Structures are given as C-alpha cells and as structure tokens.
Image (cartoon, rainbow, N blue to C red):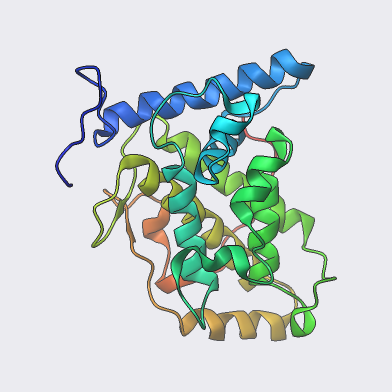
Length: 255
C-alpha cells in the first residue's frame, strides 16, 4: 500500500483497513436510520452503504441532506471499485475504466444507485449487470432481464458486501487501492460471477454455447481472495467463470 494519509485524529487513516470497516459500517447504519426516520422504511445494510458510496462517487454528498450526515472520507471509493470491475467485464471493445456510464446497458450505474430508493440500490445495479450480460437479440433495449437471475445477482453482491463488513477485502492485483475500493471491486465481481453462472446454466442450448464462447475469450479478472474462499471472487474461472452450478437461494438476505 502507499504511504498512509492520516487525517485529523490519531486513528483517522483511510489507508487502514480497520478504519474503513468502521467507516463503512457507520455509513450503512446512518443511511438505514435516515430511511427509517423519513418513512419507516427498513433497508439492508448492503443497499444503504452502496447507496451512500454511489452518491459520494457522483459528488452528491454535499448537495443533498439525504447524505449530509455521512462520515467524512473518500466513501465513493466503494462505488468506484464496483464501477471498475464492471468496466473490465463489459467494456470489451473499449475497456477504459469508468466509461461504463456511457455504454448502452450500463447507463450511469452509480447515478442510478444513488438516485433511486435506497432499498433498490443493488437491485438496479443487478438489473444493469444482467442486461449487459444478456442483452437479448441484437442488443434490443426492450429486452426484459430474467427477474430470477436479477435476484441471484443482487443477493450475491449483497452477501459479498456483508462478508466484507468486518473482514479483509480481496486484493486488486497490481494496484495500490484502499479497502473500500477493493471491496467494491469484489462486490461487482461476485455479481458478474453469479450472472455468468446463471446464463451458462440457461435451458437454451444455443444461448449457453454462446455465453461459454464469449466467456472463454475473456481475460482473467484481477481479483484474489486469501484462502481460496468458495463464496468470493477467487473461485471464478477466467473472466466470468461460466461453470454451471446449483441454483442459488434467492430469498432475501438478512439485514
């Protein structure tokens, strides 16, 4: 990691994983409380923390009271890491990082996550991922994504965020990135893995073959997980991991 940048306060250090775990935990809790106070809405911590990070990434934190009470610091890094992983997966012809905001099927994902209802934050991201991975005939924008697959992707990402809440985030190879960025990257990778597995197991043989061919041509993602975690990004084959597996439980995750 780069040299720590210690802000005011002896332990306020965004280069430190322990600081980030506490900062993200407080961020999610703040947004959950705000939603409840506003309209009695119960939202998951995963949706809440990603909503706040997306707002910070878009530069909206200072302009709306919805995010006024968030902890100080580079909270947008979580959404930035998330965006980077999606760019690597779906900007195949012009793989230039944050340009995911300009592609047909990933229209301004971070803005969508921040602008919508908090409890729909990961749902909107999952819908974008599923539509990007399976855009329909000739990329028809009228193609409706499979709701079961959207639920699987959404739950996979929520689970990864919850797992990272108090543990080390997977590393991003060849880059010196902080905990939030790495966790965002791994969260998107969990969603990509889930959608690729779901599509590869699709009952349409031609679609499955097409997906397998597409996945086989891609480069491996830059994610490593200590200890070869079965539920993290490390179990994922080269960029997409199209290995078909058993169907995932799409029941709502606990908060």
